[in-house]
Length: 206
Length: 206
DNA sequence: GTTTAATTTAAACGGTTGTTTAATTTTGTG
DNA sequence: CACAAAATTAAACAACCGTTTAAATTAAAC
Image 1 (tube, chains in turn green, blue, red, yellow):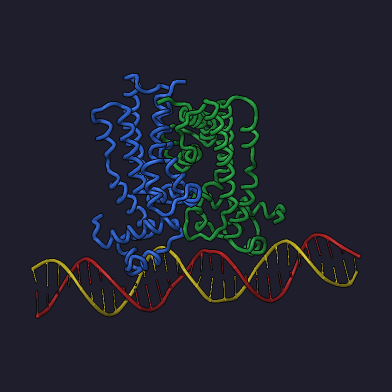
Image 2: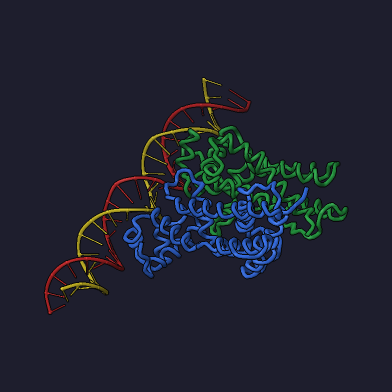
């Protein structure tokens, strides 16, 4: 699909509202009001509300890119690569947290008939890359062999998103005054914590 | 609020549908159809759809109980308590995963005017207990001092819920045939993985 | 058994939903 | 300028929403 300026404006507005109010909580009228376009334009451009969400997913997932590869295949030791990898992942999901939130909820909705192939392929590719990386570290004796590789991504993303979904709670607990302080915490303490648990998991001797 | 049999049936039906379709994706008509009651009964018993959700939260959170306390204050060494603690937490959130999903999404919806005080208090109390436990372990020299205690719960719950929200993906990746196999994985490999990362975090020497 | 209260019901309320229509305006092309 | 295609609009569509009403039924109290 060719995306002109107006289509992208609709997608970005939909992304914001879907993430804030959910898919069912967002109306085409709200989207068109906020994007300052006519209600009929959504159907005209995307066909339906569901296809609008599909277009958004494709738009964002292609944007996710694959920096993965360049970090893992670069030179340097495995531990440094874990740090670089996690820093990259946290930055990326924090930037794309809205779309991730939408996906988390709609993907687990058994009655939603949205096509999630792009999302599933993206997850599968990333897993295969990570698996290769961990196994190479295990063969070199740097990483522990007793590791559940499938659960590494859930640990990283899950930790971040539990924090994000309970932002209001952690704002109070950690005395954040504004979103800037939240962003700082994510990119410093939270990223550090995730690096710590993953490195500990990979190198821990029982 | 006194809960008779019919009220509880409405609550359980609402819990199922809210978790599957979201709050906005669930209609009172669907709830009443599935619970085999008249539409007006929801308003009659609970007042409104939003108050129905609030009643569900209170019903479930009081059910969460506080086994926490008994594990942490029991005798035995700290490492064993970590294992027991995580096993209890995973069992509990897996049992109450529907309500947790609803809360995760609605609590992060900035326009929902639901009262989440019960949820926030529950989280706060549990955090204080955990903090006391970790600090006592640190003073005894069993636990590492360089630990972000605030992020331990997000790591445990987040890992579980990322797995749960992407169940379809992990069903394919790990070749689960049915829900029984998913449940087994949660209570064995996933629980073991979380125990491993938390113990590694708490005792890891850099 | 009579009266009062609680429960249950079908129907109706005004409002909103996603989508389509048909007419109008703008843009692009020769 | 003329003409066709694309974009934009206001209005209408049937369907559904959460909630309320007022009447009918059941249960409880005396």
